[in-house]
Amino acid sequence: MSKLSNRLMKTSPIVISLVSFVLAILVSCVIMLLCGYDPIFAYSVIIEGSLGSVRSLTNTLIQATPLIFTGLAFMVGKKATLINLGVEGQMYTGAMIAALVGMTPLPLPGILHLVLALLSGVIGGGLAGALIGFLKVRFGSNEVITTTMTNFIIINFCDYLVNYPLKAEGAVAQTNKIVEGALLGKMIPGYQLTWAIVIAVLAALIVKFILEKTRFGYEIRAVGLNMKAAETAGIKVSGVMMKAMLFSGALAGLCGAVHVTSVGKRFISGFSPGYGFSGISVAALASDSPLGIILAGIIFGALKTGAMYLNMMSQIPTEFVSVIQALVVIFVSAPLLIRALIGADRKAKKGGHSHAE
Image 1 (cartoon, rainbow, N blue to C red):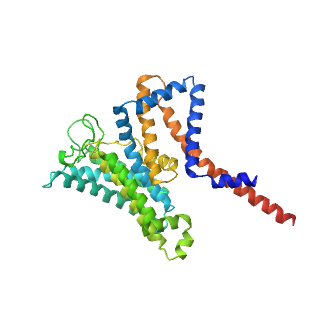
Image 2 (cartoon, rainbow, N blue to C red; image 1 turned 90 degrees about the horizontal axis):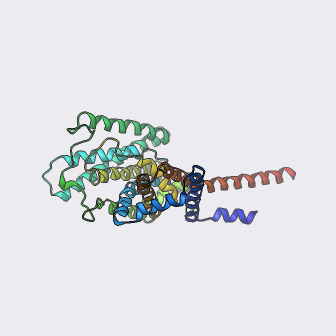
Image 3 (tube, rainbow, N blue to C red; image 1 turned 30 degrees about the vertical axis):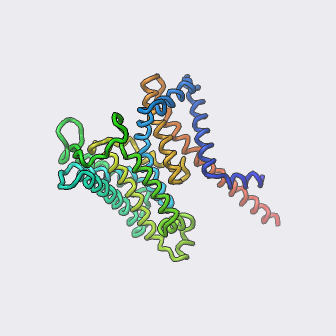
């Protein structure tokens, strides 16, 4: 039993993620069978719809782009023991500010106008995240509650702006279009894929470098591993938490800015189908690895793209894809439960031995 326990404790997070994904697929197949659907047909259609052609592959990468950003944003906060559920709101902040800058005619070359719009979104999202960090370290507020509430405030305020003072002509609640020079260009002529995916991959590489090669990254990891030990070592924990939330919010803001300057071309009310919350699933599948988040984002992007194709080609509900996503998170979390049970079992045995003595 002790050998099995040691093996479980030493199991690689990557192996856990892979096994979790396979289990999620298998369980979803069983659910499909119980509901009277053919899982082999369903997954063959999903694969064809997400990877079967150049167009489907580009659509998968489009879907993956915001998931990579939001996965990175959630992961950075988690590394510093902060559960940032406000990624959605911080993304909205970055999107709105970037849209405002992008749709304003400025005497700047196109590339500088685009850079300014993206940086504005980064700053906006970063400040929204820093506010949560400030409330946490200054007043001891629970970041889960404050991020959840700020999501409602920010999203509803953005909806007010696009329905009233910033509303463009027409029935749709949206801003005016961003000027052509401030838009990200297309990677492949004739397809909707833009350079946004490249920015997302570069962001993941930069996050990896910062976490592994800089003092700031070392401090984040130290606080995440043992807050008291980090404080004893001279690390200002409150400052690290503030900067981690600013960093997390900046990544979320960049996600929003990239979206409105690429596929959105303006701020549209309700543009996000929950990208901020999907980032939690992406980070979980990636075991909080920046490079793993790229792969996990593409996997979930493929599932989302394939689900849309499945909806067109069959009567199988696309909700099964959401079930898969939820199952992945459940199975990724399962080893933590197993380890906790093993720890409790050991404590019980120790308690029993000491009591017998």
